Amino acid sequence: MQLLSSFLKHNKTDDDLVEVIEVLMIACKEVALQLREGALAGVLGTSTLTNVQGETQKKLDIVSNDIIKKVLLDNRLVRGVASEEEDEPVWGDRDGRFLVTFDPLDGSSNIDINVSVGTIFSIIEAPKPWAKQETEEFLQSGRKQIAAGYVLYGPSAVLALTTGKGVNMFTLAHTGDFILTEENVTIPKETSEFAINMSNRRFWEPAMQSYIDDLIAGAEGPREKNYNMRWVASMVAEVHRVLTRGGIFTYPWDNRDPSKPGKLRLMYEGNPMSLLIEQAGGGATTCYDDILDVQPEHIHQRVSVALGSIKEVETLKAYHREGKKN
Ligand code: AHM
Ligand code: MG
Image 1 (cartoon, rainbow, N blue to C red):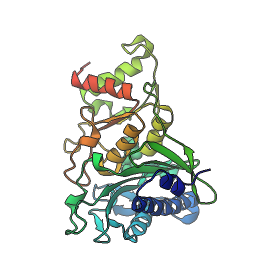
Image 2 (image 1 turned 60 degrees about the vertical axis):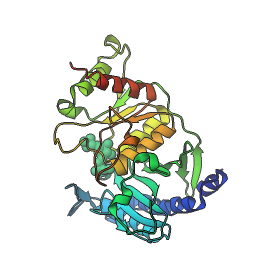
Image 3 (image 1 turned 90 degrees about the vertical axis):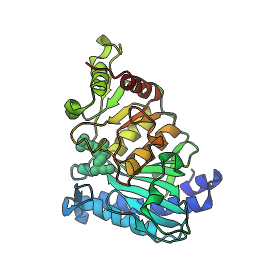
């Protein structure tokens, strides 16, 4: 039985990074407790507030954001945090080495129906720890991440973590420890399972429409095999399924609002999930380019996301390269 901290130390992870990951897990344990209590803790339902993206915030979005933000900013190694639920970065210790971005409770539309949600996080080095604290410091491409992961709050709470040397999973035990339960997670190269919100079909690019239509056509169609579909509407649960048994998950660009290249956010969702997927041998693309190579222009930027089993991701990219139309 290996505990998270001893696993990281055994793998020669930088001591400061171990400290920040441990601190983050203290916050995630508190979030897990709040979720478990649900209605008993009076945390279900919607607040009267909206976030910078105009989305109504659930009470638990705010509770989780406050817990994670406080725990991180109390640590001397954290120079600043950027959260999906905050308008601007929030600054901590000026000499801190790390910047942390997070989505405190992804999939929060699922909270009130008691379906899995999760916390997603990404850690980068502050480029100039001695300089003025400015938003631009966060605008680093996903390749610069030194650690990324999520905690899935499902039937069990599971941490999936990468520090750039593969992906490992840890399950939260009743003792409060995260214990290694899956080492060197590897995504199967091929799959027959896809995840997309089909109700948006009419808004997609023609290439995405024909790719999905061909999956649905099954054994009689050009792909010559049957595919199954899943949609939890909770990215952490979808990515966990993909890491566990393969698949392709996509929330692509659509033309509902031309100013938004997709629903998901690059810094809080796209980048950390893409690093996990690539580290487990899968692919993560905007449908054209690697998500990890996208240069962020602002912290709440959105991105088209398709990730999962490498061969399926390559096929999806080929449809887009060829601009396939029905
Ligand atoms: P959120 O960060 O506001 O919770 O939004 C992100 C979530 C993802 O977890 C999920 O993949 C997607 O939104 C579901 O969207 P939809 O409701 O359109 O199916
Ligand atoms: Mg989210």
